[in-house]
Length: 365
Ligand SMILES: *Cc1c(COP(=O)(O)O)cnc(C)c1O
Image (tube, rainbow, N blue to C red; front, side, top):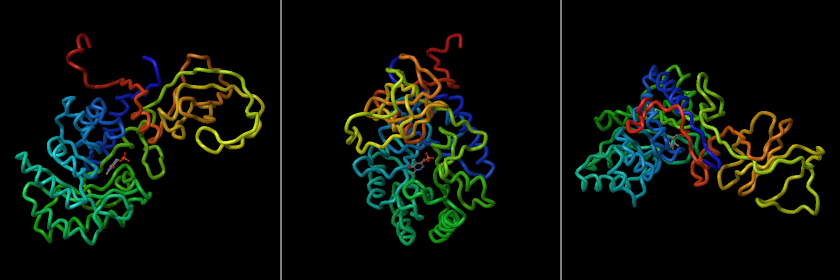
């Protein structure tokens, strides 16, 4: 196989998922295992299910359909508000969706009715991060209207923090979510199965808080795949941070000066930055660029530095290491680099360490 490749150690991903599922279960919190950054990878989804997640979480119906096509029958939650234009597909393929618009809820109900199904919904509440969510003052009216929709089951409420504005889940906003759940239940005489307390940014709060209140589910993607909480991107104790790496091939390796020459204007991606003259260095180019990855999110091997990247060339100062043309360099990835690499048609994926053996190829395994 040629070309850059993402290597996914399924055994390490499973370990991360199992560890988080078990730690959170001690707090009576279940896990929705989010596969969106993997574009709905069935390999990853299977590991998450083996690890005991309650449901899979996906943001795009296309990814959900890919999972269904690959034979995944486990419950899937759509974690982005459905597009009005996709409600039929949503109702067909997912059991539950997160919602914040009555128009969409009404369309989901109608679509479910037409398909002779029921569809579960979680109403998202805006608690300050200013991405999706019903404003607190409107939640009661929205729940009232939603309860009237004949083909929906209101499973509970949820919130999403940190993604847009970096607002941290804390004792105050998490208690607000719990209070809201309880007060809605008594107002409407219902009981909520789900109070979904956020994403990987809620991990520190959930594991460290003396009282998690009504929160009984977290939607986790990055912490499982990359082993870090996401408020400060610190490694979570006991998790692997190297389950996913990106490997690319060296296409040029030379000793070159650090200082460009000639009149300097803009580079391919805007302003060029002044460089300190450090004499000559071992420079290597790997066949990787912005069409494959977010270069700022790459962690090169120890002793090497990323000097820059254009569409298809990533330039490295390889320090004391001399690389040969044709050899490979392995990079750590952050969420942004992972997302871009997963989405690039040029980047291959190699899965190792999977627990699920394909029965059609399992002879002698
Ligand atoms: C992406 C997303 C998640 C998962 O976030 P991670 O940081 O990867 O854990 C959870 N909930 C919603 C609504 C999301 O969009």
